Length: 329
Image 1: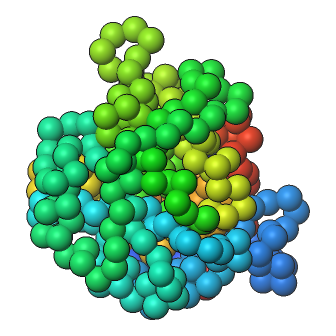
Image 2: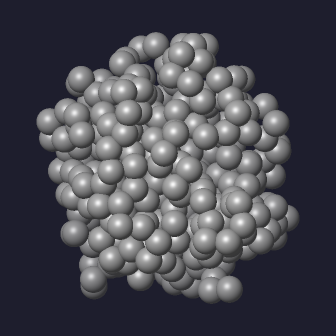
């Protein structure tokens, strides 16, 4: 199993220790050097990832301002609106504050494959309202069917079905609650768009099918998920950007709702980038840099599901840069 290649190997702050979310992440030595002089393009061929400890609506606004250069036209905001009573999702108040900077933005979701009120559009809409997502439009993109987007250089797919309404948007903000995941090991920006934008009846079934047996697992599932994500990133091109919120990081996805395991890792902050691989790599690296007792559950979940293969396969498909410069905001 390849270990993370970002913070845990290169470090974080030169000659110092960063206290993140109340936890001192020691041993994270590295350099920021001249990164501040060229914060948008990165240095030495590395991607740029912005970091903010303040997990708040104003914090989201601050981070978004650093990575919104390609965001034009009608903007979709892909986030997880949660199951009933979901305790760990990104709070609606934070997103409402961010919306001041995304005039006309629309939260987008798709129906799900598993048994849930979110399996049907009617049930999904009721749950969206129950969870407080009433301050802006919410588009269930597969309400009126699906559309197939091509997968360039895919091993498993030539195309994957997504919610048809994805075609109605010019840009996408991928606003992700970073956490563990029962099948994926971890759920970052990649999982948010790959599974989250896939249509409930067709696309999600495609991604969860297997070459042998009823469900894929391990590296095969990671590769299927990555190929779904690549279809979305290729579709939007330079008009897609990413924010990962490292808060209430249960080993379980928000799809678990109130059944999600209580997080044992501390809240760390938020990361943003225009590079999907870099932002997910940095998120994983932050988890791996935690003290053993705080990271053990998440690391076990990630490695027992071959979750790091998400990062490896994204790199293989040319979806981003696993080397990054981390810039505190």
